[in-house]
Amino acid sequence: AARCGQTIQRSKQAIIAAIDLTNSQAGHEFVSAELRLAAQCVGEVTGEVYNEDILDRVFGRFCIGK
Image (cartoon, rainbow, N blue to C red; front, side, top):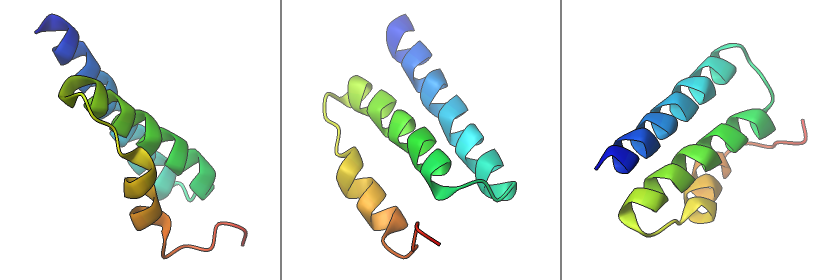
């Protein structure tokens, strides 16, 4: 349970970092890296990770090259 709590805390920190990066208009690649970390942490707790599918949906509307 302690390990799961620590992993969820890491996920929360990554999400907060992603929000901060978005608010400061940082590049999408930095936001994506934080969201990928958050999804990986949640996947560690649940036993499954589908981060590529999640990120494809989130960033499917953005043109990262611009």
